[in-house]
Amino acid sequence: MKKNLSPIWNYSQASAIPYSRRNEILQLMFEIFDEDKLSSDDSMGALKLQALQWKDSVGSAVWYEIPKGSAKDVSGKIQIKVSVSIHRVQGLRPYC
Image (tube, rainbow, N blue to C red; front, side, top):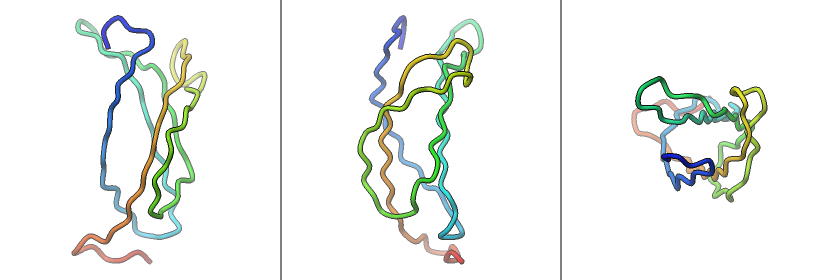
């Protein structure tokens, strides 16, 4: 977002994340960057979501505070919605 201190991305991403054991803990890391044309992009913070369950679920949108110290002069919130859909992939061994 150009010249915007309160950007709204309305971004959606679907990813296949393989796992081998049912008791593995799902952790997702979100890193937020600005976009600079003449220099490298600057970190605007990072957020780790932990202890997500390996089961079908449709989450609701939740606001998370960007942790202080995850980037220089960080402040703000990010809204994230996580949905999980479990299915077998042909050719992969089932979990232990």
